Length: 315
Ligand SMILES: [Zn+2]
Image (cartoon, rainbow, N blue to C red; front, side, top):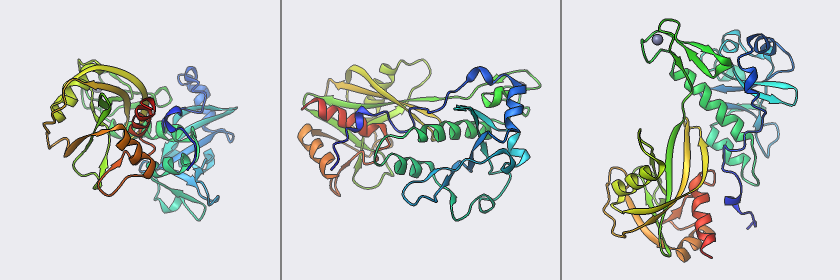
């Protein structure tokens, strides 16, 4: 087993590796020149799956294309991602332009982004999932926001992909991020873990839920835990956060101290919840768990970081 301490690293999809150069997004001349520049690099997606270069059998890498390989239609909706040294980097979605087979071959394939992140982060932290994740979230937002939410007219892309403008009512629409609280609930030497309906049998993790309008993070945390498990929360501490591009959430990781222990489940939200003590949690993490219980088995999820950190702090 490696001596890697996962929770001391940024989470998967954090650590965006480019200079965002956001002052250049409104420079339409510069953006137009870079879209036609052979030195520009294009991160390519097909139905939200990034194109990966798989010629190195060990690790897939983003398969950057140049502008000559991008259909005109996709160039018109390219999103500027930033600068990599002197190269402008754009993201494009090809799903509406060409078939998956046309853009792939023996050395290039479109791969689900979760799968890509798991492979890239298997041995050490990589910032590449952050580039692909941000690109995916932005491209997906454009795909789903083609019409004005105010008047229904088709909107137009602006600011190199960071705006949609309505030509009729002039409303401006900006890419959204949905905040989600994810909390490790603890009391004394015990932590609370739960499983949602539909998860693989035996998988348990931290509780989570969307922040509602008008709520602080603390209030969202207390409401979600009370709704799902009947447990009352007192102190709430912020730990770390994670962009989660499925489609565009921000996971806000918290430690939440319980004031009560009795579990009253809302089975629609949480199929089962249990208190486990630190020694049990540590053993489940070390061994990978049993058929009966595995703790946050996906290392790319912030839940794993929160659980490992809480267990380590109690040592
Ligand atoms: Zn409008």
